[in-house]
Length: 292
Ligand code: ZN
Image (cartoon, rainbow, N blue to C red; front, side, top):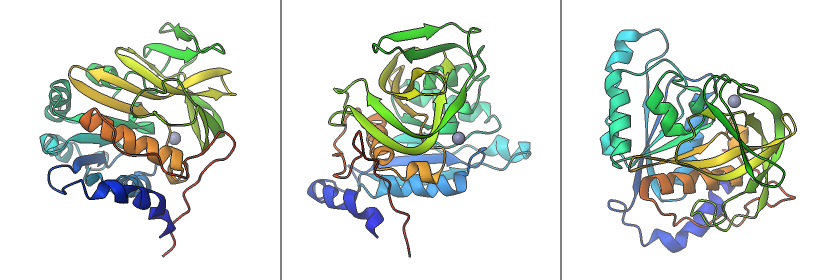
């Protein structure tokens, strides 16, 4: 059970101050269709979150592809949760479910968390594109944002340059660009992430986006957005394109980023400390695979 260890020990201090009913953040993970192994990553994200003792996580699994009648009835009760975490990349949802997410988020009733391929979904849903800020799109799918070597933001117009890709795959350095934001506060300026797809050329309307971290891609020779938030009406969105598979998620940097981002999306604040074994600029910190 070494897997649990770092978060569990650190959480002991705060554990007593949380009453299970009033202060536990209720998370709904939506999955069911994805070109990634959601059957592996959903249970892992649930565990990474619940091991902090800050969250209670439930899962809503959509019907599989090609079941339009069942899909039309897929409408998990989003209003019963504090935050929705999308691990979904598949067929469109019903207009009712789209509207639930849009209106609840806009009114600040729920938060939204977007991980990796969830940002590939729903390219024709305009509100979704605004919620996520940027996603995996062709170069016509909106503007691109990157930072130059001086750390200055550069925008590329829609239709110019490349569409989204992962032109580098491997371990990479995450560079914190906003050290004062509750999600990234206290993180080392640079930390080494384990092997993952480094998404590049994310495209979108990029409205109300706060860029918290980037990663330099050897594929694009640019500093690509890696952690950001979006203000959507009164709602908060936390977005990271990290997390291609379970191995990429077994990183204390990813785990802490996910937990803090989810807490922030739900509440607007972060109480979770960084794990002691958070990665450094030179040393990655993989989470061992749990052995039974
Ligand atoms: Zn991927």
